[in-house]
Length: 293
Image 1: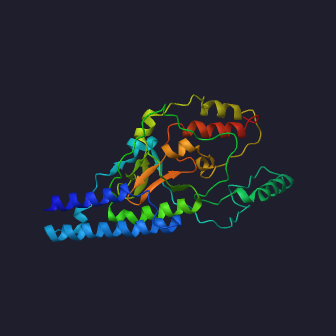
Image 2 (image 1 turned 60 degrees about the vertical axis):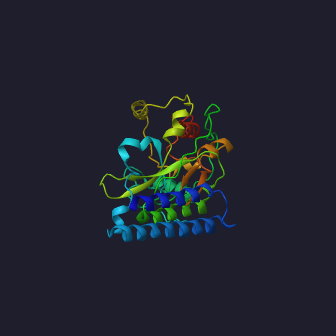
Image 3 (image 1 turned 180 degrees about the vertical axis):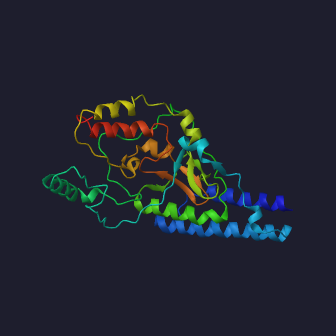
């Protein structure tokens, strides 16, 4: 009885995914909300059916087969991070991360002046959508391989709201869009090191397996550190959400498409997890720092 109920619900979810390219509303965020409500209803109905059939708690039937260990697949996954709400960033120019005791008053004043001039491109913490970068674009060459369209994997009811909030933030920021691509990679749940908390990710293992590797020489950290010995002054900068500065070609957008219980989406900016993403981003950094390192 339980197996037949589960199979029936699986069919319903598969049918929902198959028609997920059809818009449910003109506004993408409203479209996503309607899908979320429908998916929650399906999952809750399934849980009630299970309880009636077996007398066990609904939580006993939440699938854990979709949970994998982060250490095993980190290089193949595109994390779906929480986006920081856009707000005016207030910088503390007296912070220990900014102030250098070796600076003179004149040097400190020049540093603060430069930082204030660039305030518009800074964020205190978290993730935000950076402006498009120049000098590189993300493309994915699969040598004409037939599109790979995998089925959506189950997301337990307790994680569905988090998935909705993450996708809503990415849609609002213009990082993703609903897709009609013939490609689809699945969403997976990754266990954090504590074995309890989770991260939602896209599994690009099959896409990466057929992607032509970009030939680009990555710099060696030891060599860069050795070069620093000849400089008197240097600073450390952290590029917030750096990969998202890279635009995607039309082909890359289609191949990067992913599917879940809430629909079929594609990336408008470069995500983590793609085979050539580190090389593409390194090229941007090399272009930006050319002549300095």
